[in-house]
Amino acid sequence: MRLLALLSLLATCCGKRYFADTALWHQDRSGSAKHPDSDRVIAWMEAGNGFGTANQFRADLSFHLFEVNGSTPWRAFTKTSEFYDGECDHAVMPVPEFGRIEGEADYHCAGGGDCHLLAVDYSKNKIYEMWRAEIGNGRYNGNPFHGGCTSVWDMSEAYGWDVPVSDFSNYGRGLDCTSADAAGIPITPMLFTADELASGVIDHALRFVLPNKNLRARKYVYPATHSTNPTRGPDSAPPYGAHLRLKSMADLQARNPSVDFGKLPSGAQVIITALQTYGMFMADGGNVPLIGLSDHYTTAKYWDRANYAYGDEDPNRLFHEHDLKFLSPGDFDMLDNGGPVRSLGDVGCSLRFPWSEPTNAPPVPLSPSPDTPAPATPSPATPAPLTPSPNTPAPVTPSPDTPAPNTPAPLTPSPNTPAPVTPFPATPAPLTPSPDTLSPVTPSPDTPAPVTPSLDTPAPATLAPLTPSPNTPAPLTPAPVTPLATPSPATPAPLTPAPVTPSPNTPAPATPFPSTPTPLTPSPNTPAPVTPSPDTPFPATPTPLSASPKTSAPDTPVPVTGHPTSQLPVTPAPLTPSPKTPAPD
Image 1: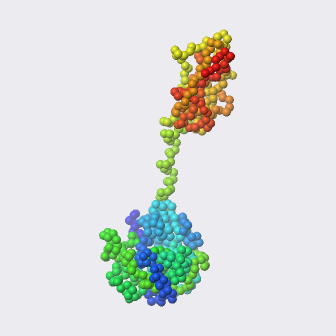
Image 2: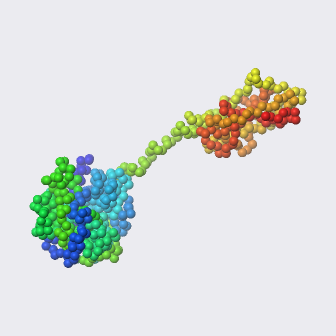
Image 3: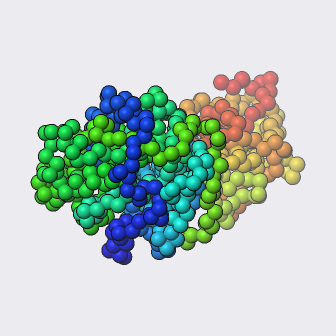
Protein backbone atom coordinates (compact mmCIF):
# COMPACT_ATOMS: atom_id res chain seq x y z
CA MET A 1 0.00 0.00 0.00
CA ARG A 2 2.78 2.43 0.83
CA LEU A 3 4.50 1.76 -2.53
CA LEU A 4 1.24 2.31 -4.44
CA ALA A 5 0.60 5.56 -2.60
CA LEU A 6 4.08 6.82 -3.38
CA LEU A 7 3.77 5.86 -7.04
CA SER A 8 0.54 7.84 -7.27
CA LEU A 9 2.37 10.91 -5.95
CA LEU A 10 5.13 10.54 -8.52
CA ALA A 11 2.63 10.93 -11.35
CA THR A 12 2.61 14.71 -11.00
CA CYS A 13 2.47 17.48 -13.45
CA CYS A 14 4.68 16.48 -16.34
CA GLY A 15 3.53 16.53 -19.93
CA LYS A 16 0.15 17.99 -18.91
CA ARG A 17 -0.91 21.61 -19.23
CA TYR A 18 -3.12 23.38 -16.75
CA PHE A 19 -6.02 25.33 -18.28
CA ALA A 20 -6.45 25.92 -21.98
CA ASP A 21 -3.67 26.70 -24.41
CA THR A 22 -5.13 30.20 -24.74
CA ALA A 23 -4.38 31.02 -21.08
CA LEU A 24 -2.14 34.06 -20.61
CA TRP A 25 0.77 32.10 -19.04
CA HIS A 26 1.00 29.79 -22.07
CA GLN A 27 1.64 32.61 -24.53
CA ASP A 28 5.00 33.26 -26.17
CA ARG A 29 5.84 36.85 -25.24
CA SER A 30 9.40 36.97 -26.53
CA GLY A 31 8.50 39.58 -29.14
CA SER A 32 6.03 41.68 -27.12
CA ALA A 33 6.69 45.36 -26.51
CA LYS A 34 7.55 46.38 -22.97
CA HIS A 35 5.27 48.43 -20.76
CA PRO A 36 5.54 52.22 -21.12
CA ASP A 37 6.41 52.43 -17.43
CA SER A 38 8.96 49.60 -17.62
CA ASP A 39 12.15 51.69 -17.47
CA ARG A 40 10.99 53.66 -14.41
CA VAL A 41 9.93 50.53 -12.49
CA ILE A 42 13.10 48.57 -13.37
CA ALA A 43 15.31 51.54 -12.42
CA TRP A 44 13.65 51.77 -9.00
CA MET A 45 14.08 48.03 -8.44
CA GLU A 46 17.69 48.17 -9.58
CA ALA A 47 18.40 50.85 -6.97
CA GLY A 48 18.43 48.35 -4.12
CA ASN A 49 14.72 47.48 -4.17
CA GLY A 50 14.93 44.19 -5.96
CA PHE A 51 14.70 40.49 -5.23
CA GLY A 52 14.74 40.26 -1.45
CA THR A 53 17.50 38.20 0.15
CA ALA A 54 20.80 39.89 -0.75
CA ASN A 55 19.02 41.24 -3.87
CA GLN A 56 19.87 37.96 -5.59
CA PHE A 57 17.72 35.98 -8.00
CA ARG A 58 17.61 32.75 -5.98
CA ALA A 59 15.14 29.89 -6.30
CA ASP A 60 12.80 28.39 -3.72
CA LEU A 61 12.32 24.66 -4.41
CA SER A 62 10.16 23.81 -1.39
CA PHE A 63 6.68 23.47 -2.96
CA HIS A 64 4.97 20.09 -3.41
CA LEU A 65 2.22 19.18 -5.86
CA PHE A 66 0.22 15.92 -5.83
CA GLU A 67 -1.91 14.26 -8.46
CA VAL A 68 -4.96 12.90 -6.63
CA ASN A 69 -8.10 10.94 -7.45
CA GLY A 70 -11.09 9.26 -5.85
CA SER A 71 -8.92 6.83 -3.86
CA THR A 72 -7.04 9.69 -2.19
CA PRO A 73 -8.16 10.56 1.37
CA TRP A 74 -10.30 13.73 1.30
CA ARG A 75 -10.98 15.78 4.42
CA ALA A 76 -12.94 18.80 5.57
CA PHE A 77 -10.95 21.41 7.49
CA THR A 78 -11.54 24.05 10.15
CA LYS A 79 -11.13 27.64 8.99
CA THR A 80 -8.50 29.82 10.66
CA SER A 81 -8.36 33.63 10.93
CA GLU A 82 -6.46 33.54 7.60
CA PHE A 83 -9.54 32.21 5.83
CA TYR A 84 -11.54 35.13 4.43
CA ASP A 85 -15.25 34.41 4.14
CA GLY A 86 -16.65 35.61 0.83
CA GLU A 87 -13.25 35.31 -0.91
CA CYS A 88 -12.10 31.75 -0.11
CA ASP A 89 -13.57 28.27 -0.74
CA HIS A 90 -14.39 26.10 2.28
CA ALA A 91 -13.80 22.95 0.26
CA VAL A 92 -13.08 19.33 1.09
CA MET A 93 -9.34 18.94 0.51
CA PRO A 94 -7.33 15.96 -0.74
CA VAL A 95 -4.65 14.85 1.73
CA PRO A 96 -2.46 12.08 0.24
CA GLU A 97 -1.27 9.63 2.87
CA PHE A 98 2.42 10.38 2.35
CA GLY A 99 2.01 14.00 1.27
CA ARG A 100 3.49 17.17 2.68
CA ILE A 101 3.04 20.94 2.56
CA GLU A 102 5.34 23.68 1.29
CA GLY A 103 8.62 23.82 3.18
CA GLU A 104 7.84 20.87 5.48
CA ALA A 105 8.44 17.12 5.70
CA ASP A 106 4.77 16.36 6.45
CA TYR A 107 1.50 18.22 7.08
CA HIS A 108 2.72 20.08 10.19
CA CYS A 109 3.41 23.78 9.52
CA ALA A 110 6.36 23.92 11.92
CA GLY A 111 8.48 26.61 10.25
CA GLY A 112 5.87 29.38 10.19
CA GLY A 113 5.99 29.75 6.39
CA ASP A 114 3.13 29.89 3.91
CA CYS A 115 2.71 26.09 4.12
CA HIS A 116 0.75 25.80 0.86
CA LEU A 117 -1.04 22.52 0.16
CA LEU A 118 -1.38 21.89 -3.61
CA ALA A 119 -3.09 19.07 -5.51
CA VAL A 120 -4.55 18.45 -8.96
CA ASP A 121 -7.37 16.02 -9.78
CA TYR A 122 -7.53 15.40 -13.53
CA SER A 123 -10.63 13.24 -13.15
CA LYS A 124 -12.50 16.31 -11.87
CA ASN A 125 -10.43 18.80 -13.89
CA LYS A 126 -9.79 20.71 -10.65
CA ILE A 127 -6.81 22.27 -8.88
CA TYR A 128 -6.94 22.52 -5.06
CA GLU A 129 -4.75 25.13 -3.33
CA MET A 130 -4.67 26.00 0.36
CA TRP A 131 -2.65 28.62 2.23
CA ARG A 132 -1.35 27.84 5.74
CA ALA A 133 -2.43 24.22 5.94
CA GLU A 134 -1.81 22.51 9.26
CA ILE A 135 -2.72 18.98 10.39
CA GLY A 136 -2.12 17.85 13.95
CA ASN A 137 0.88 15.48 14.36
CA GLY A 138 1.73 16.00 10.66
CA ARG A 139 -0.06 12.90 9.37
CA TYR A 140 -2.79 12.90 6.74
CA ASN A 141 -5.25 11.54 9.33
CA GLY A 142 -4.05 13.74 12.17
CA ASN A 143 -6.37 15.95 14.11
CA PRO A 144 -7.23 18.79 13.94
CA PHE A 145 -6.98 19.94 10.29
CA HIS A 146 -6.81 23.74 9.99
CA GLY A 147 -6.53 25.82 6.84
CA GLY A 148 -6.32 29.43 5.67
CA CYS A 149 -7.63 30.80 2.39
CA THR A 150 -8.41 27.99 -0.04
CA SER A 151 -9.24 28.13 -3.74
CA VAL A 152 -10.61 25.43 -6.03
CA TRP A 153 -9.82 26.12 -9.69
CA ASP A 154 -11.82 24.62 -12.56
CA MET A 155 -9.37 24.00 -15.41
CA SER A 156 -12.22 23.95 -17.93
CA GLU A 157 -13.01 27.58 -17.10
CA ALA A 158 -11.10 30.42 -18.86
CA TYR A 159 -11.55 32.94 -16.00
CA GLY A 160 -11.08 35.78 -18.50
CA TRP A 161 -7.36 34.99 -18.76
CA ASP A 162 -7.55 33.77 -22.33
CA VAL A 163 -5.89 35.77 -25.09
CA PRO A 164 -6.96 38.08 -26.52
CA VAL A 165 -8.55 39.61 -23.42
CA SER A 166 -12.08 40.80 -23.99
CA ASP A 167 -13.04 42.32 -20.62
CA PHE A 168 -10.69 43.81 -18.04
CA SER A 169 -13.56 44.45 -15.60
CA ASN A 170 -14.64 40.85 -15.13
CA TYR A 171 -11.90 38.21 -14.87
CA GLY A 172 -10.33 35.72 -12.49
CA ARG A 173 -12.28 34.90 -9.30
CA GLY A 174 -13.47 38.52 -9.20
CA LEU A 175 -11.89 41.94 -8.69
CA ASP A 176 -10.56 42.48 -5.13
CA CYS A 177 -10.81 38.71 -4.52
CA THR A 178 -7.81 36.81 -3.21
CA SER A 179 -6.98 33.09 -3.35
CA ALA A 180 -4.34 30.81 -1.83
CA ASP A 181 -1.95 33.26 -3.53
CA ALA A 182 -2.24 36.94 -2.60
CA ALA A 183 -2.54 38.02 -6.25
CA GLY A 184 -5.74 35.96 -6.66
CA ILE A 185 -4.23 33.82 -9.44
CA PRO A 186 -3.51 30.06 -9.40
CA ILE A 187 -0.10 28.88 -8.15
CA THR A 188 0.16 25.46 -9.77
CA PRO A 189 0.29 26.40 -13.51
CA MET A 190 3.41 28.56 -13.02
CA LEU A 191 5.65 26.23 -10.98
CA PHE A 192 8.57 24.59 -12.79
CA THR A 193 9.65 21.03 -11.96
CA ALA A 194 12.80 18.94 -12.08
CA ASP A 195 11.16 16.72 -14.70
CA GLU A 196 10.55 19.76 -16.92
CA LEU A 197 14.17 20.83 -16.56
CA ALA A 198 15.34 17.31 -17.40
CA SER A 199 13.12 17.32 -20.51
CA GLY A 200 14.73 20.58 -21.65
CA VAL A 201 11.43 22.47 -22.02
CA ILE A 202 9.24 24.70 -19.83
CA ASP A 203 6.18 25.77 -21.82
CA HIS A 204 4.61 28.31 -19.45
CA ALA A 205 5.35 31.47 -17.53
CA LEU A 206 6.86 31.21 -14.04
CA ARG A 207 5.87 32.61 -10.64
CA PHE A 208 7.93 35.05 -8.58
CA VAL A 209 7.56 36.97 -5.31
CA LEU A 210 8.95 40.22 -3.86
CA PRO A 211 9.21 41.73 -0.37
CA ASN A 212 6.16 43.77 0.59
CA LYS A 213 8.24 46.92 0.91
CA ASN A 214 9.23 46.54 -2.76
CA LEU A 215 5.65 46.28 -4.02
CA ARG A 216 3.44 49.22 -5.01
CA ALA A 217 1.13 49.92 -2.05
CA ARG A 218 -2.28 48.21 -2.43
CA LYS A 219 -2.12 48.13 -6.26
CA TYR A 220 -2.69 45.32 -8.77
CA VAL A 221 -2.95 44.92 -12.54
CA TYR A 222 -4.31 42.23 -14.86
CA PRO A 223 -4.16 39.20 -14.50
CA ALA A 224 -4.04 39.78 -10.69
CA THR A 225 -7.29 40.50 -8.88
CA HIS A 226 -5.88 41.39 -5.47
CA SER A 227 -3.13 43.19 -3.52
CA THR A 228 -2.40 43.29 0.23
CA ASN A 229 -2.32 45.89 2.98
CA PRO A 230 1.34 45.25 3.99
CA THR A 231 2.60 46.46 0.55
CA ARG A 232 4.18 49.90 0.94
CA GLY A 233 6.30 50.69 -2.13
CA PRO A 234 5.93 53.93 -4.14
CA ASP A 235 4.25 54.33 -7.53
CA SER A 236 7.56 53.43 -9.17
CA ALA A 237 7.43 49.97 -7.55
CA PRO A 238 5.91 47.02 -9.45
CA PRO A 239 2.28 46.17 -8.54
CA TYR A 240 0.78 42.74 -7.96
CA GLY A 241 0.36 40.97 -11.31
CA ALA A 242 3.41 42.67 -12.87
CA HIS A 243 4.77 40.61 -15.78
CA LEU A 244 8.56 40.61 -16.14
CA ARG A 245 10.45 39.09 -19.07
CA LEU A 246 14.18 38.30 -19.15
CA LYS A 247 16.21 40.19 -21.74
CA SER A 248 17.75 38.55 -24.79
CA MET A 249 20.94 36.51 -24.50
CA ALA A 250 22.99 39.25 -26.13
CA ASP A 251 21.81 41.76 -23.54
CA LEU A 252 22.44 39.34 -20.71
CA GLN A 253 26.01 38.64 -21.79
CA ALA A 254 26.65 42.35 -22.13
CA ARG A 255 25.33 42.99 -18.62
CA ASN A 256 27.05 39.97 -17.04
CA PRO A 257 30.42 39.60 -18.78
CA SER A 258 31.83 37.35 -16.01
CA VAL A 259 29.15 34.70 -16.52
CA ASP A 260 29.74 31.89 -19.03
CA PHE A 261 26.12 31.15 -19.92
CA GLY A 262 27.13 28.10 -21.97
CA LYS A 263 28.57 26.43 -18.85
CA LEU A 264 25.57 26.95 -16.60
CA PRO A 265 23.85 23.73 -15.46
CA SER A 266 21.36 22.52 -18.07
CA GLY A 267 18.36 23.22 -15.83
CA ALA A 268 19.45 26.84 -15.36
CA GLN A 269 19.62 27.25 -19.13
CA VAL A 270 16.06 25.84 -19.49
CA ILE A 271 14.80 28.38 -16.94
CA ILE A 272 16.53 31.25 -18.75
CA THR A 273 14.83 30.25 -22.01
CA ALA A 274 11.41 30.04 -20.31
CA LEU A 275 11.87 33.49 -18.75
CA GLN A 276 12.83 34.95 -22.13
CA THR A 277 9.85 33.30 -23.85
CA TYR A 278 6.98 33.38 -21.31
CA GLY A 279 8.29 35.62 -18.54
CA MET A 280 7.16 35.51 -14.90
CA PHE A 281 4.20 36.96 -12.96
CA MET A 282 4.39 38.72 -9.56
CA ALA A 283 2.12 36.64 -7.32
CA ASP A 284 2.91 37.01 -3.60
CA GLY A 285 5.05 38.65 -0.94
CA GLY A 286 8.32 36.89 -0.10
CA ASN A 287 12.08 37.06 -0.10
CA VAL A 288 13.25 34.28 -2.45
CA PRO A 289 11.95 35.31 -5.88
CA LEU A 290 11.83 32.30 -8.23
CA ILE A 291 9.49 29.43 -7.21
CA GLY A 292 9.78 25.78 -8.29
CA LEU A 293 8.55 22.39 -7.14
CA SER A 294 10.58 20.13 -4.90
CA ASP A 295 12.04 17.03 -6.56
CA HIS A 296 10.97 14.82 -3.64
CA TYR A 297 8.22 13.16 -5.71
CA THR A 298 9.56 13.70 -9.24
CA THR A 299 11.49 11.24 -11.38
CA ALA A 300 14.33 13.65 -12.15
CA LYS A 301 16.39 15.13 -9.29
CA TYR A 302 18.04 18.52 -9.11
CA TRP A 303 21.34 17.01 -7.95
CA ASP A 304 22.95 13.79 -6.75
CA ARG A 305 22.04 13.71 -3.06
CA ALA A 306 23.62 10.31 -2.57
CA ASN A 307 27.09 11.70 -3.19
CA TYR A 308 26.81 15.41 -2.41
CA ALA A 309 25.54 17.15 0.68
CA TYR A 310 24.98 20.40 -1.21
CA GLY A 311 23.67 20.74 -4.73
CA ASP A 312 26.18 23.39 -5.81
CA GLU A 313 29.00 20.89 -5.13
CA ASP A 314 27.68 18.52 -7.78
CA PRO A 315 29.36 19.44 -11.12
CA ASN A 316 26.78 17.45 -13.07
CA ARG A 317 23.74 18.85 -11.28
CA LEU A 318 20.54 19.69 -13.08
CA PHE A 319 19.91 22.85 -11.08
CA HIS A 320 20.71 24.47 -7.77
CA GLU A 321 18.92 27.33 -6.01
CA HIS A 322 21.88 29.69 -6.48
CA ASP A 323 22.67 29.00 -10.13
CA LEU A 324 20.88 32.16 -11.32
CA LYS A 325 21.57 34.44 -8.36
CA PHE A 326 23.67 36.76 -10.56
CA LEU A 327 20.55 38.01 -12.36
CA SER A 328 19.38 41.47 -11.25
CA PRO A 329 16.19 43.52 -11.90
CA GLY A 330 18.06 45.35 -14.70
CA ASP A 331 18.16 42.07 -16.66
CA PHE A 332 14.34 42.19 -17.05
CA ASP A 333 11.71 44.30 -18.78
CA MET A 334 8.12 44.79 -17.59
CA LEU A 335 5.43 43.85 -20.13
CA ASP A 336 2.03 45.43 -20.71
CA ASN A 337 -0.94 43.05 -20.56
CA GLY A 338 -3.54 45.82 -20.70
CA GLY A 339 -6.09 47.02 -18.21
CA PRO A 340 -5.88 49.71 -15.55
CA VAL A 341 -3.92 49.73 -12.31
CA ARG A 342 -6.47 49.13 -9.55
CA SER A 343 -6.45 49.88 -5.83
CA LEU A 344 -7.40 47.20 -3.33
CA GLY A 345 -10.90 47.81 -1.98
CA ASP A 346 -12.17 50.02 -4.79
CA VAL A 347 -14.68 47.37 -5.88
CA GLY A 348 -15.11 44.85 -3.09
CA CYS A 349 -14.84 41.12 -3.75
CA SER A 350 -17.77 39.34 -5.31
CA LEU A 351 -16.78 35.78 -6.22
CA ARG A 352 -17.58 34.91 -9.81
CA PHE A 353 -17.24 31.17 -9.23
CA PRO A 354 -18.15 30.37 -5.62
CA TRP A 355 -17.30 26.83 -4.63
CA SER A 356 -20.33 24.54 -4.58
CA GLU A 357 -18.96 20.99 -4.64
CA PRO A 358 -20.79 18.69 -2.17
CA THR A 359 -18.89 17.64 0.95
CA ASN A 360 -19.61 13.94 0.64
CA ALA A 361 -16.07 12.64 0.78
CA PRO A 362 -15.65 9.28 2.55
CA PRO A 363 -14.52 9.75 6.15
CA VAL A 364 -10.84 9.34 6.98
CA PRO A 365 -10.08 7.47 10.25
CA LEU A 366 -8.37 10.12 12.34
CA SER A 367 -5.45 9.64 14.68
CA PRO A 368 -5.61 11.56 17.97
CA SER A 369 -3.81 14.86 18.31
CA PRO A 370 -1.07 15.12 20.97
CA ASP A 371 -3.31 17.66 22.70
CA THR A 372 -6.48 15.56 22.51
CA PRO A 373 -7.00 12.76 25.07
CA ALA A 374 -8.08 9.44 23.60
CA PRO A 375 -11.84 8.94 24.03
CA ALA A 376 -13.10 6.61 26.76
CA THR A 377 -9.60 5.55 27.73
CA PRO A 378 -8.32 6.53 31.19
CA SER A 379 -4.99 8.27 30.98
CA PRO A 380 -2.25 7.77 33.59
CA ALA A 381 -3.40 11.03 35.17
CA THR A 382 -6.98 9.73 35.56
CA PRO A 383 -7.65 7.64 38.69
CA ALA A 384 -8.99 4.19 37.96
CA PRO A 385 -12.70 3.97 38.77
CA LEU A 386 -13.72 2.39 42.06
CA THR A 387 -10.15 1.59 43.07
CA PRO A 388 -9.14 3.25 46.36
CA SER A 389 -5.64 4.69 46.57
CA PRO A 390 -3.45 3.79 49.56
CA ASN A 391 -4.12 7.19 51.20
CA THR A 392 -7.83 7.41 50.43
CA PRO A 393 -10.45 6.01 52.84
CA ALA A 394 -12.21 3.04 51.32
CA PRO A 395 -15.83 3.52 50.22
CA VAL A 396 -18.53 2.53 52.69
CA THR A 397 -19.63 -1.04 52.04
CA PRO A 398 -22.66 -2.35 53.99
CA SER A 399 -22.07 -5.68 55.72
CA PRO A 400 -24.52 -8.09 57.37
CA ASP A 401 -23.56 -6.46 60.67
CA THR A 402 -24.42 -2.97 59.50
CA PRO A 403 -26.51 -1.08 62.08
CA ALA A 404 -29.94 0.41 61.45
CA PRO A 405 -30.57 2.71 58.44
CA ASN A 406 -29.81 5.88 60.41
CA THR A 407 -26.47 4.50 61.54
CA PRO A 408 -23.47 4.86 59.22
CA ALA A 409 -22.13 1.69 57.73
CA PRO A 410 -18.75 0.62 59.05
CA LEU A 411 -15.87 1.68 56.86
CA THR A 412 -13.44 -0.64 55.20
CA PRO A 413 -10.10 0.57 56.55
CA SER A 414 -7.28 1.40 54.13
CA PRO A 415 -3.66 0.68 55.10
CA ASN A 416 -3.25 4.19 56.58
CA THR A 417 -6.71 4.63 58.10
CA PRO A 418 -7.32 3.78 61.79
CA ALA A 419 -10.02 1.32 62.73
CA PRO A 420 -13.52 2.83 62.84
CA VAL A 421 -15.39 3.38 66.05
CA THR A 422 -17.42 0.22 66.53
CA PRO A 423 -19.54 -0.66 69.57
CA PHE A 424 -18.58 -4.34 69.48
CA PRO A 425 -15.13 -5.82 70.04
CA ALA A 426 -13.67 -2.36 70.49
CA THR A 427 -15.89 -1.78 73.57
CA PRO A 428 -13.76 -2.34 76.65
CA ALA A 429 -14.74 -5.30 78.78
CA PRO A 430 -15.90 -4.70 82.34
CA LEU A 431 -12.94 -3.97 84.55
CA THR A 432 -11.58 -6.59 86.90
CA PRO A 433 -10.45 -5.03 90.15
CA SER A 434 -6.72 -5.23 90.70
CA PRO A 435 -5.06 -5.37 94.10
CA ASP A 436 -4.58 -1.61 93.87
CA THR A 437 -8.20 -0.94 93.01
CA LEU A 438 -10.67 0.05 95.67
CA SER A 439 -13.12 -2.62 96.61
CA PRO A 440 -16.64 -2.24 95.34
CA VAL A 441 -18.72 -0.09 97.58
CA THR A 442 -21.32 -1.86 99.66
CA PRO A 443 -24.35 0.35 99.94
CA SER A 444 -25.14 1.48 103.44
CA PRO A 445 -28.64 1.53 104.85
CA ASP A 446 -28.81 5.17 103.81
CA THR A 447 -27.88 4.41 100.18
CA PRO A 448 -30.64 3.22 97.86
CA ALA A 449 -30.03 0.21 95.69
CA PRO A 450 -28.52 0.78 92.30
CA VAL A 451 -30.99 1.66 89.66
CA THR A 452 -31.95 -1.08 87.26
CA PRO A 453 -32.74 0.31 83.80
CA SER A 454 -36.40 0.05 82.92
CA LEU A 455 -38.25 0.62 79.69
CA ASP A 456 -38.36 4.31 80.54
CA THR A 457 -34.71 4.51 81.37
CA PRO A 458 -32.13 4.46 78.58
CA ALA A 459 -29.78 1.54 78.80
CA PRO A 460 -26.48 2.54 80.31
CA ALA A 461 -23.38 2.61 78.14
CA THR A 462 -25.49 2.08 75.01
CA LEU A 463 -24.53 4.17 72.00
CA ALA A 464 -27.20 6.35 70.47
CA PRO A 465 -27.99 6.10 66.73
CA LEU A 466 -25.68 8.21 64.64
CA THR A 467 -26.32 10.67 61.85
CA PRO A 468 -24.07 9.74 58.90
CA SER A 469 -22.08 12.48 57.22
CA PRO A 470 -20.83 12.01 53.63
CA ASN A 471 -17.37 10.89 54.63
CA THR A 472 -17.26 10.69 58.46
CA PRO A 473 -19.03 8.51 61.01
CA ALA A 474 -21.37 10.53 63.22
CA PRO A 475 -20.22 11.24 66.79
CA LEU A 476 -21.68 9.29 69.62
CA THR A 477 -23.94 11.04 72.13
CA PRO A 478 -24.17 9.29 75.46
CA ALA A 479 -27.71 8.50 76.52
CA PRO A 480 -28.85 10.22 79.69
CA VAL A 481 -28.25 8.14 82.76
CA THR A 482 -30.24 8.37 85.94
CA PRO A 483 -27.80 9.31 88.67
CA LEU A 484 -27.24 7.03 91.56
CA ALA A 485 -28.68 7.81 94.89
CA THR A 486 -26.66 9.97 97.16
CA PRO A 487 -23.77 7.89 98.45
CA SER A 488 -23.18 7.40 102.06
CA PRO A 489 -20.38 9.12 103.91
CA ALA A 490 -18.36 5.98 103.41
CA THR A 491 -18.64 6.12 99.66
CA PRO A 492 -15.39 7.33 98.08
CA ALA A 493 -15.44 10.15 95.57
CA PRO A 494 -15.89 9.04 91.99
CA LEU A 495 -12.74 8.70 89.94
CA THR A 496 -12.19 11.21 87.16
CA PRO A 497 -9.77 10.10 84.46
CA ALA A 498 -7.02 12.54 83.61
CA PRO A 499 -7.37 14.34 80.26
CA VAL A 500 -5.46 12.71 77.51
CA THR A 501 -3.90 13.86 74.20
CA PRO A 502 -5.57 12.53 71.03
CA SER A 503 -3.60 9.82 69.32
CA PRO A 504 -2.64 10.36 65.65
CA ASN A 505 -4.54 7.20 64.84
CA THR A 506 -7.71 8.09 66.72
CA PRO A 507 -10.78 8.28 64.45
CA ALA A 508 -12.59 11.57 63.93
CA PRO A 509 -15.50 12.55 66.16
CA ALA A 510 -18.94 12.38 64.69
CA THR A 511 -21.90 14.75 64.65
CA PRO A 512 -24.72 14.14 67.15
CA PHE A 513 -28.08 13.07 65.77
CA PRO A 514 -30.50 16.01 66.08
CA SER A 515 -33.41 14.02 67.53
CA THR A 516 -33.74 12.14 70.81
CA PRO A 517 -31.61 9.02 70.65
CA THR A 518 -33.22 5.65 70.55
CA PRO A 519 -31.54 2.67 72.20
CA LEU A 520 -29.77 0.44 69.72
CA THR A 521 -30.81 -3.12 69.16
CA PRO A 522 -27.72 -5.19 69.82
CA SER A 523 -26.28 -6.99 66.83
CA PRO A 524 -25.08 -10.58 67.10
CA ASN A 525 -21.57 -9.32 67.69
CA THR A 526 -22.46 -6.66 70.25
CA PRO A 527 -22.33 -7.46 73.96
CA ALA A 528 -25.57 -7.08 75.83
CA PRO A 529 -25.91 -4.01 78.01
CA VAL A 530 -24.50 -4.56 81.45
CA THR A 531 -26.88 -4.29 84.38
CA PRO A 532 -24.90 -3.11 87.32
CA SER A 533 -24.88 -5.32 90.36
CA PRO A 534 -24.02 -4.26 93.85
CA ASP A 535 -20.51 -5.58 93.27
CA THR A 536 -19.89 -4.05 89.85
CA PRO A 537 -19.02 -0.41 89.28
CA PHE A 538 -21.45 1.38 87.03
CA PRO A 539 -20.34 1.07 83.37
CA ALA A 540 -18.77 4.11 81.89
CA THR A 541 -20.03 6.05 78.89
CA PRO A 542 -17.64 6.33 75.95
CA THR A 543 -16.41 9.80 75.08
CA PRO A 544 -16.30 10.92 71.41
CA LEU A 545 -12.84 10.66 69.95
CA SER A 546 -10.76 13.52 68.56
CA ALA A 547 -9.90 13.60 64.86
CA SER A 548 -6.81 11.86 63.59
CA PRO A 549 -4.73 13.68 60.95
CA LYS A 550 -5.38 10.79 58.51
CA THR A 551 -9.14 10.58 59.09
CA SER A 552 -11.68 12.59 57.05
CA ALA A 553 -12.71 15.75 58.85
CA PRO A 554 -16.18 15.73 60.48
CA ASP A 555 -18.97 18.04 59.36
CA THR A 556 -18.97 19.77 62.77
CA PRO A 557 -15.81 19.29 64.85
CA VAL A 558 -16.32 18.57 68.53
CA PRO A 559 -13.31 19.08 70.79
CA VAL A 560 -12.85 15.98 72.87
CA THR A 561 -10.06 14.04 74.47
CA GLY A 562 -9.23 10.41 74.17
CA HIS A 563 -6.88 8.00 75.83
CA PRO A 564 -3.78 7.31 73.75
CA THR A 565 -3.94 3.59 74.32
CA SER A 566 -7.67 3.07 74.02
CA GLN A 567 -9.82 3.17 70.90
CA LEU A 568 -12.89 3.98 72.95
CA PRO A 569 -12.02 6.28 75.88
CA VAL A 570 -14.31 6.21 78.84
CA THR A 571 -15.85 8.94 80.94
CA PRO A 572 -17.82 8.07 84.04
CA ALA A 573 -21.46 9.09 84.11
CA PRO A 574 -21.94 12.35 85.96
CA LEU A 575 -23.17 11.94 89.55
CA THR A 576 -25.12 14.34 91.62
CA PRO A 577 -22.99 14.79 94.71
CA SER A 578 -24.62 14.67 98.07
CA PRO A 579 -23.75 17.13 100.77
CA LYS A 580 -21.60 14.44 102.29
CA THR A 581 -19.77 13.48 99.10
CA PRO A 582 -16.41 15.13 98.47
CA ALA A 583 -16.13 17.13 95.25
CA PRO A 584 -14.51 15.26 92.35
CA ASP A 585 -10.89 15.98 91.50
